Length: 143
Image (cartoon, rainbow, N blue to C red; front, side):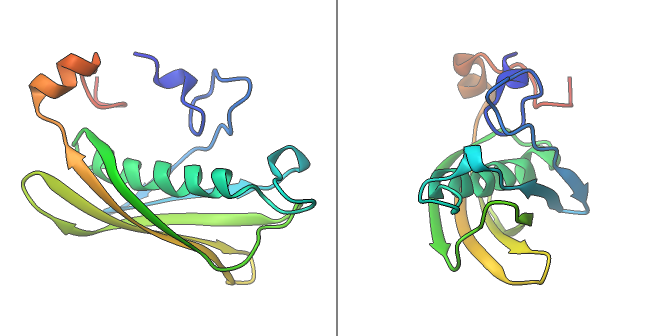
């Protein structure tokens, strides 16, 4: 279905981040180690990498609830730079669920507990027709 090549979580994308998210109730968790290849400014992780990690964590929340969604909005607050060599923990959980929308809060913290970034996402639940139009037959892991 193409998910193996996802930039963030795909294990067959040689240029991807290869992150594995783990479920804990309604929440998801992952860790990421910043390397020099992830920088924007010298020694600082690119904001697009941070954004991608928070977006992917937000997408895994509904996925683990058996829902197929797309991100409609993603609002990120960058609190502190992630440095090369630093490992961060990413976590996300639902904050509000409606019939067609799922709101997700996510954050990224380092090993000392310093918050590096937070996000709020609005995820739109896709109907079976919308899923078919996108070529999605079933949620990842639910085939």
